[in-house]
Amino acid sequence: MVRVIGVRFRTAGKIYFFDPLEFEIKKGDHVIVETARGIEFGTVMAGAMEVSEEKVVQPLKPVIRIANQRDVEQEEANRGKEKEAFRICLEKIRDHGLEMKLIDAEYTFDNNKVLFYFTADGRIDFRELVKDLASVFKTRIELRQIGVRDETKIVGGIGICGRPLCCHSYLADFVPVSIKMAKEQNLSLNPAKISGVCGRLMCCLKNEEETYEELNRRLPGIGDPVTTEEGQKGTVQSVNVLRQLVKVVIDAGDEKEIKEYPVEKLHFRRRHSKKEKMELSKEELQELERLEEEEWQRQEQELMSRAEEAQRQNARNRQGSRRPPAQQGGEGQRPLVQRTEVDRRPGQRAEGRQQGQRGGQQRQGGRRFETEQRQQAQRPGTKQPTEERSGNRRRHDTPRHQNRNRQSSQNQGNRENNQNGKNRNDNRNRREGRAPEGQRGAGDGQA
Image (cartoon, rainbow, N blue to C red):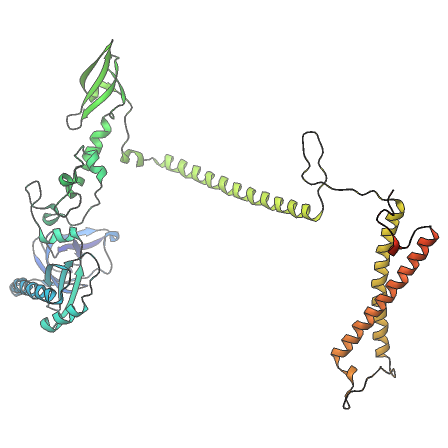
């Protein structure tokens, strides 16, 4: 717990906490404190009290001193200087032709800064205006743009109820207000009747919101079925929220009657308020946490199973792309992929195997020839074929030409092996009574 006092600097402004130190400060006293804007003169709205550390904004600044008579006179002098500063700033705005509405001017207690509050539709370039004001007041100048609700809070006025505006009288902060609050209180949705001086929804709609929520919770909705104490069933026509009365349309034979009942004499399904929905026991909270944990684990398992299924599907797709799928049969089904099988005789299959063997022999012959050439080049005393160029350098001495010669020798060996294999096949075909490979027709080799 921290010992603090509450200080306010404006009428209906926010209350800030300060450390009272050893001063005996009571509610209503004036104190001098240090803020982010400098030295300020404030009024104590709450005496020394103990609050939790969570409510205190660190660092907690101390009170400099309790205001004396001289401090009070200086504060009154500053209020008079603010009116003169407001008039001068208004003239400068007209001179610069800026589309901005000046709302208020404020001096800090030590006259270290002058603040001007204004409203505008968009962004305003007031750099030249700040220079002119600084040359006049010889101090720091700050122009702050505010909204229409803040403008009304500073200026004040009389509301449609005939009383001073709530925001200017006692509201320290603006609370969110929605059109749902007007519906909950059965107010007219005419903007002229539910809007305040600032043009926004009236802040007082929030004042009775909780009361109307509690009263409406006890009442049935319009059109809901209800049952009276006599056992008669009917439909709700209208409700009176403040008096807790309900008008019910009851069928009496061929006619319909409208009767008014207190809500205690009707049976219906009651609505639950927001507070009742949020008030849960410890066991219920633990059960909700357990259900959430189970739901999270179930979703995680589903994601993992989907990922595994996708991996298996990708693997099946890759295997299917490598080998042709089998032809699907069955009545009423059309095969997705049709294959054309060509009947071959045993001689053709043997010929295919021989061609595969010849290809392997050709590759082995090319490698053998290359190995022999390399071994011959490494033998001592072996003379390599040379070709003289203009100069003393030999053409085959460079690695680039040696690689080219080796490749050409390998290609020549492959061609010789191919020709030898082809000649052997032609001789074999003649012995078996078939035409050579180059002289076969389109119909040869088929049954």
